[in-house]
Image 1 (cartoon, rainbow, N blue to C red):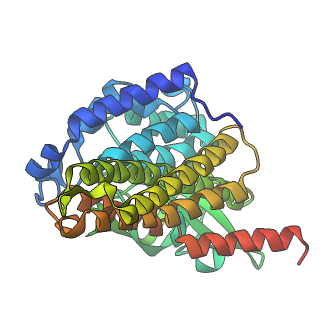
Image 2 (tube, rainbow, N blue to C red):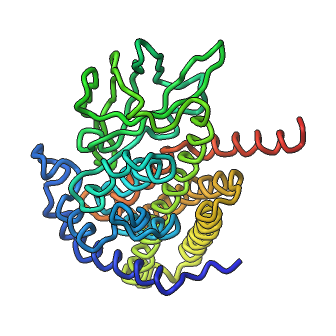
Image 3 (spheres, rainbow, N blue to C red):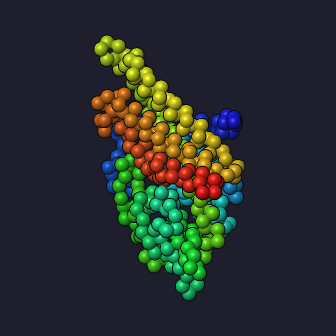
Length: 383
């Protein structure tokens, strides 16, 4: 299969990489107070970069033209995520564009889209959603909803919702019990609603996250994104896009970690010889290169199938498995080949390791992806 990019896709890729690389440099991280300041403009994300991406129209790549978007698709969105991973750009592309906006684009009413998406395209607001590893099945759903006097009443609690405190709305799946059956519904919850509590939490990568608590939150049907009749199907689609989005960022992280390692091994001298000339170093770097190419191939296969609405259950799980396994090996190889300096938290490579580990477990680690693949194979075999 030919995964060559079109002319338009190449232009988008070139633009986003130029904007991010010029803004997020090693000097940016050395001088930045993003991870230490408690001010709103420096709380783990880069607001100026978010504005630059909006001005360039990149936040609207996958949004419909009716809300000011370009009307393109998921492949183009993955190009943004890959570029983000290469520079570890601290902006909410995954949470806002994949976890927040994409469900509204696919399943939201025109009223819902007009309420939230134009301001997102302009960079004025952001969106987010509950990550899929927190919701493996209706039996473990952290949130529940029931109807009372024409209103939906939501309760529950979950940790680690990315950019929850900064977002205008959060996409939340809930369990709904109807006639003895458990179904999934999906709601749009705004942080300012009565009964919504957010508690700041910390992550290894510095990404802003918060614990989300819903205590008798009353919502009307206007905030219902997916009714119980379609909720399970819609949530599966949301989860698939999230997993592939994570794989796209992981590929960017691995690509640049390997690039930095290659440059270091050429410059670094050991016993009077360049580090890359040692056979064991070359073999380990070659293995990391193979891992990156496997991550790349499986990512674009899954992204393309999702972009054209083809069945992609197995492809999505395989892409996320490679993102976990390949990303893990590349991050460890890069750090080991840098020697002691690879563990120095002041050295740029350390951030790549932290991002790789967080991406590995977000959405479910490799063992979970294998478990889901096994279930699919068993179902196809009628076991």
